[in-house]
Image (cartoon, rainbow, N blue to C red; front, top):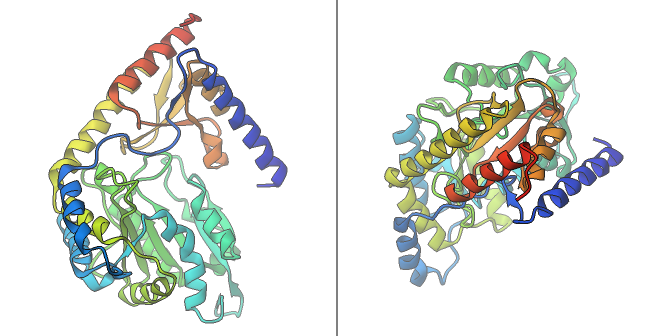
Length: 387
């Protein structure tokens, strides 16, 4: 995207925010996927108990309890048999996603890898509808960032990757369940993506931070994780966004190489946070309750918006609603203005990629009573009534 296009988009986003802020009762912000619900008590207690052990530096890849807890969780919840040595800590997942291209280039020793024909491997492939960190991480590493179009079901369209881009790629990002659409890749779809990557020598990295919000969702991890990494987070499952606790797991040799790189850069999850994460990972009850909250919010918001012809046509992940005007009367920016007139700020779909032009993303990150108030305002705005 050109600088002028970015400037134009920034101006349009600022105008939406100003419109929402102008509402007499203030703005209700549903743009950022930042949880509003409480951190589980079991995690808070564990963090407090670990404060007395926080004097020394924690291990960068995570202590044994942390890595083992993630391995247990991945097997229990998703059937992924990953040994704890093939699991390592990251400080949340966004920093790992942003830094992975640079680490991979450094690990190659030359700063790039090469194809059989001697061409430079300098390209990061990422979903054409996605949040900006995949592209930004590629740019920060001096790489080409190439968006892969998604199909009618919001899944990666591997056939749309140009042969030249495939030949130059060293990393392919997958996001399942997906932000912003909520789409979930099946085990068969993930297997096809992994096979595509292995055939071409491209690492497949699967961002799975929303996986525990969808019953029966599949991970990219399996019995053979050569050329595969998966990234997991507690930010949404356990409302840990402020704690910054995640992991990456998969290809054991690559995990070890990344651990060595990250240790030298001081990438460390604090000791109390590691203790809190272990307690949260071993407790599925609070995670099920949190998922039920999102499902409940999704149901009553969608039921109310449907009366005004606004429907969700994304996937089943309940944190995000991927909305459009069923009659096709408005584009995503115009639809976002309809919300903003009610003081309700949502994200135009075009901010996630050109294929999102007709949609908006609504993050269900406000308490139930606030969402009820937002819906009441929206209905009044649609009827042309002031509040």
